Image 1: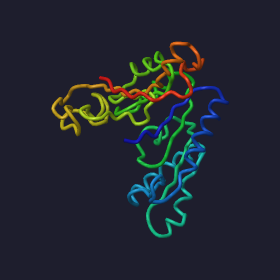
Image 2: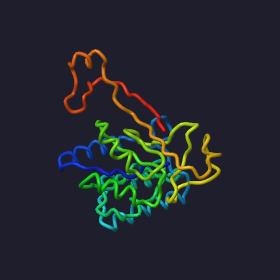
Image 3: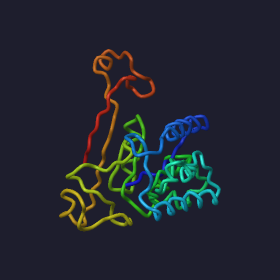
Image 4: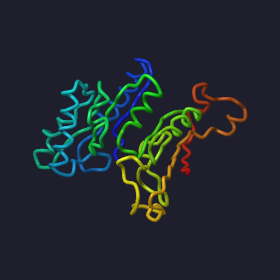
Length: 235
């Protein structure tokens, strides 16, 4: 599954800081077959499809914050393979195809929203319903989104919220995502037309001593800077 759309909210400085962090991390990815590097896409058909999404977005007024098309001319491409580097698109229209469809390539679409309601409207207006995620340090905020998403696999601070077996993979009734019979994982294969919503969450775990004493807690998150991650899958 491709988690290829990022809806962001905040003031101009927050937006700029987040974009810079994303660009910095993505631009450090190198082409190659070694561990930690990124190889080519699987075939020419996939390459052409990804390129069309990028080019069409630009034609519609989107801004390329990072353009990975140059990889098609790198030293690896000379020896064969269909190469596309990390690409970040800042969209001006939520109607762009890249905002609605899974590209299955190294492309991230970013779109700025003005409110939570607008974010939910965009997410739930998508014809597909496999998954949706929210990033937050506030449990109340997380619950607001999770209770409103129209998708089957939900994540809190999780990029790809696909649950482990025996939880099923798929969408919900009324969406174009896989739904019904012959599920590919776990008990979902015999649950047929049952709507199951799975939530996978990742929260910072507070330092117990600091939590009891009240020292070292961040006023912004309630957690210390050296917290560990805690994963939990719920039904």
